[in-house]
Length: 488
Image (cartoon, rainbow, N blue to C red):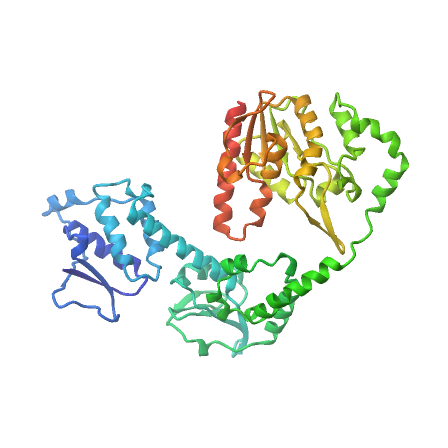
């Protein structure tokens, strides 16, 4: 048995030197042992120390021939896996290293058991780092230099050194310290340093700022949107002991049903007065445009403003028609106008529109060459005080508005129609697609054009996890790039 003793639980450089020496010496994974200095069960009776110094000299050219390199992907993966709290992580990485000489593309084989296990552990480490950024809570203290901030945190994996630079960038002008059972990080407004492990009693108790934070958290808690399982998925109970606001959660959850009933029972504000007056001016005279088959995009615009095919016109500021060139080869169909689109009278000018514009540019599509519209032409919402909360159109409302979407398609004659989300898919395909299964698939429509479904850009805005958001955005851009290749 060949043994290597590492300086710490996260000693990546030490593991790399020892693992490289073992691999060059032909030590098989079953005969390799890695332990941490000072850890229980560190040494074995028959262990032989591994020589990690330089082994290849001018007199040892045969061994130099045996040397091999690994990809950056493996090195990056190993740096993450080392931070995992599993006891066998060193052995897992060495098995991969052992195989990489004969299988140089092994890391690309995600179905391989060892590769999949390593990637899962790296994902867990990345998630732990993200949760640390979200759930660290600083408390104010005073020392000889004045104001400082200290936090206690218990990460599921050893991510302190990986994550501390984030807090350095975010709180550059503050002096702070983060204490964990694995170690401590200190920023004095000039230098980031790391120290020994800490215990919970070393962190300060509640401060005055914490009471303000609890009040803010309680005031922003929306019982109507509460999903306990989703909340616990994003903020697992294991983190609650580190969060001052967690003490409020059981009470807020218990009272949510009563508060929701009160909100639902509250009377809605009066409908939009501006639109009520416009409708009252000449409702009967406006109807012909809404029923006649439009022969131009201008006729579609007039018809939408007079449309009474469903009740959504009552609370909207105005109808929002499509926008773009009459000869567009690509038509993009969204769900419905949002709050900003309803006020501006133009599609995709709000936050989701900004996400779409950026993704189109990255995919090589000029927005000015695209005709953009929505499955439903009026903003469906629920008034709540001064705010208007988005509500998804139902199948009847989408079906009623297909008159206008079909008219736009007939006049534009696009080569490809891209539906953003399931609601848009219903308007384009005549049925509600399963976006996760059908996204990116070309489907021939009744007029000979091609229909394609992908996610709605507003989905990217709702993702709380930065890594998941980046991955979803890459997939969205890939879908747009595939559409660009299809339209030529």
